[in-house]
Image (cartoon, rainbow, N blue to C red; front, side, top):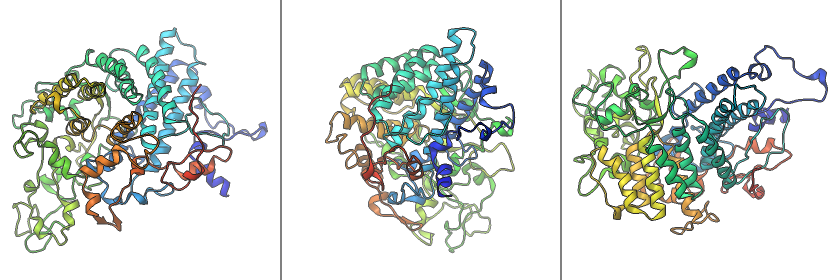
Length: 587
């Protein structure tokens, strides 16, 4: 029974079908929809490609499996705090408490498995020509590279599985992050050559492949190549949006940044900034749409709950009415830091209160003084919420904070649904980030004026004051990413990526040898996120984090089920003492 438990729980054993040499024990197909039958022609493989596209939605939407990977990316960053799991020491190889750090590992390898099926079946299917074959192979390579890019910057050294597995396999080995990055660089170079220049919304293009390839080139410290690949995107069929467009364009209270973040505008033809987006429509069949974006739920504060008291100590809020529909049923899964709410907007004497930056304009944000008591039974109905009335000062941590309403607001099209962030398209890659990636490449090369030029493309579009070459630093670049890409980029992944680049080049006292003891990710989080210095305590968790938490633990079920090989654990977590040197090459 113990072995069966391991087989069920172990990730890599969930990716394969157990086999036996006795033919009479072979399972009989219950339907004709087996891989051998479905994936016999290009149409069958196209259906698998649709699955790969659909699974990407797990990063941005709640698809019913309870993952929505991006909330972990921001909850473990300089911009947010996981209020219900403040103590990262409670994140272990056996326990991820309230967040899906372990589950995400399994989910990503499930996607790798699907990619490998497509890549393998390409060689057995008859295509009309080599171009059609290579285009399908490019899709498999892109998605596999995407998931491995995320894996190595979330979990470090991990096994690289590059083929379809059809039988029992218990001897997986860990590959080095460097080896995996080198492999996916080659795969993405192939994808760039074989994907189309333009495609329907949600489909892959050369631009999407070049955008991801730029990140991989940066990870591999190939900065000239990163400049070239990002320039291919910037000079391609894309452009930053600089004029009002789409839904609400006629609403003079709103502005360009509001337009840019309307889910209805993400994939329309007039939006030239979108490189790759996940597609999610309420009108689609139930099995083709998500449960919603949940942006208002995950990032919004719990303003409607009982701790929000009025001057008589009574509940001042109710979960109903226009305010409920507009702000949503926030749960503070990602409690926004003061750094993101306020500090990051200070520049050249301006503050969040008077900045010209549209990304922090009054029309786009809801600040603390704008929360009004909405309980008709309250003596203070209609007045601004006063945190001094709260029973516990700590209630303010969850119950009230400023939010970027222009990003989080996604109304529910199902009027009977709880307002949490409804269905809608969402950016995976857009051109503003490409400019910031190229700026980063110029920074690493010491070409600060060119870096400033790219940063200012993004800043001036948002009506922010331009910066100078002398102000270009890695911190400024990461600040600009925060201002532009909140709830959109995989924040933890990008912080870890630049942390590895610093360590690889032995800059600022960082090295690969002592990465688990000293890294940029940890230092920046501690500088920008005071939660850990204040030792805030909630649900029995006292806020705490260490440098080794830059990487998340490998699930112990995966390691123990792999009885004939060694899968390494990250330093700082139980089991790391049994590690073996990772494999440094991938054939």
